[in-house]
Length: 355
Ligand code: NCD
Ligand code: ZN
Image 1 (cartoon, helix red, strand yellow):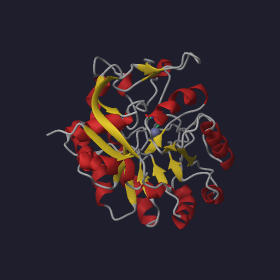
Image 2 (tube, helix red, strand yellow; image 1 turned 90 degrees about the vertical axis):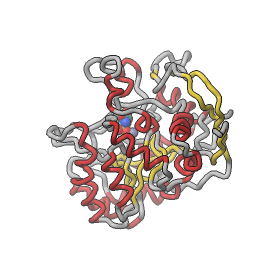
Image 3 (cartoon, rainbow, N blue to C red; image 1 turned 60 degrees about the vertical axis):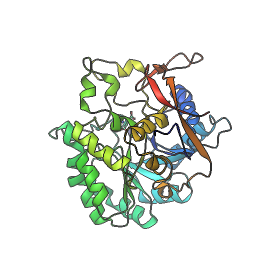
Image 4 (cartoon, rainbow, N blue to C red; image 1 turned 135 degrees about the vertical axis):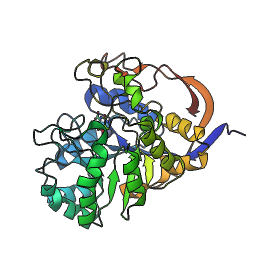
């Protein structure tokens, strides 16, 4: 018999974009309503969070909007070619950030995703930073995608595993690493098997769609994100690791809001999918379909939280089998713009997080 409700500890979003300004005011309440105890806040603002001062100021702007919630915004440092290892350690020891985010850019300064143009061009040149991080056990959160023009878009992740990740793990055996928003089955095999303190975050949308979704009904910007969704065999492989309860995999929504005007642009559509309104319910659908409810709690609320200095919550949340209509988009009447299209917006979802 199918369960009608599932109760798990309150969860933690291991990868979240909340942006700044009006967008922050619109999207942060969505994650708060989802009862997350906190989130790893991505640093890829237009002006990247690349110093202690910027990270503290950004955290203050987020905290000012928490409205009494106990949500913990866990800040990250945006690694650039100029980041000083001493500042990395100081920010970590002072509790400003809990991890360092690696984006990579090619020699032309083109990044592979939104807000990554300031990313690392000279990875070997960053090894002194990794050495300091290894010593102080500061996690490296890696967007592992090769961004060179001659690397096929759909192979970017696996090329980066061989070329970037493996040498890092070999050189820094004690460095905690999180492979962000993993999509490629070969990368999943690697993360599951390699003898290293490595984990991976997986988004709800990558568990649900394959690359065909980018072309449904014509070019479909609503399904365009980085890493791009992969072929079906990869989606299935990643999903199998997740719903079979492999503890190296944990929920990180990569909810990445963009104003509709930049999302629906014919030329230059922005990469990013917004799931913050219904992330818990989407993940629940996946585990329900795979008859794997015993693994939902660990995936959402337990796996490798200690890496981020978080504990498993002693409070619980309940998700009930109850249909509800997911809005097409979120916006604010007070603010006017932006308007953010919701992943699966307009659909009826079968699960609802209880109040
Ligand atoms: C993210 C964004 O919009 O900031 N976009 C995305 O497609 N995932 C950046 C990222 O996480 O790569
Ligand atoms: Zn992201």
